[in-house]
Length: 283
Image (cartoon, rainbow, N blue to C red; front, side):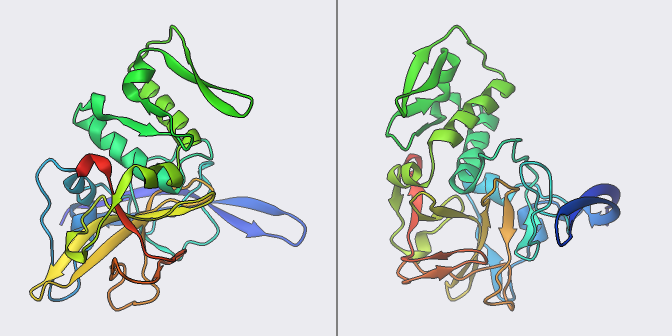
C-alpha cells in the first residue's frame, strides 16, 4: 500500500465573546495514495457496485476526480476553514478561487468547463447569463468583455485576445458573476426516470439564492436499485466537497434519490420539490 505523509497548515476558528481570531495548527496527514480519487476512496455499500461510465465522458471525468487527503477541511475562498466541518466526506482537489464567486451552480459549471478544457473541446465552452445572454470561451478569446450599464450587462469589444489558462479562469469568473441556478436550470432538461440518473446530473432549485447539488457517482445492486454520491459548493464560495448522509448513516456518504420524491434532503439543504436535471449538451 502506497502511503504518503504530508504536513498541512490548517486554520481553525477560536471564538471569543467579543471577537474572533484564527489560530494556525500544523497537522500531519497520512493517506493511502491508491484511494485518492472518488471511485477508489468510496466503495459502494454491500451488494452494490459502481455503475460504469462511458470512456471519455463527463461522468468518467467526475468519478475519477482527485481528492484531497482524508480529514482535509472545507475552506472558503479566503482559504479559511468553514465553521461546520461535519457535513463533508471528502474535498475535491480543485481550487475555489480567491473571490466569493464559485458557489453552488458555479461549482458544476467549473467542473464541466474544466472537463471540456482538458479535452481541448474549447468551442463547446459557453453558458447563459441569468439575463439570457450567451457568453462563450470563444467570445472571450475574440476580445469580447462585459460591462454593467444601468444595472444591465452589456458586451464590449476589446483588444485583449488572451487564450491561456489564466485567461480561461478569468472567463469563468465572469460566468460565475452573471450565471447561476436560474440560468443553468433554463439550459437543462429534466431527468424523468431514476435509472437514467448519471454522474454530471444535478438536483436544482433555481432562485436567488437557489441551490444545486451534483451527482458524482452511481452504484447499483443486482435488483437494479441505485445509490448516489453527491457533491456541492455553498455560500460563501468554498471547496467542492462530497456530502455526508446524516439521514442514513448506514450507507453514508451514499444517498437514495427518487425523481418523483416530494422532497430530497441533503446534509445542508432540502430540495422541494425534487428536480433532477441534465445539461442540454448531453441530450
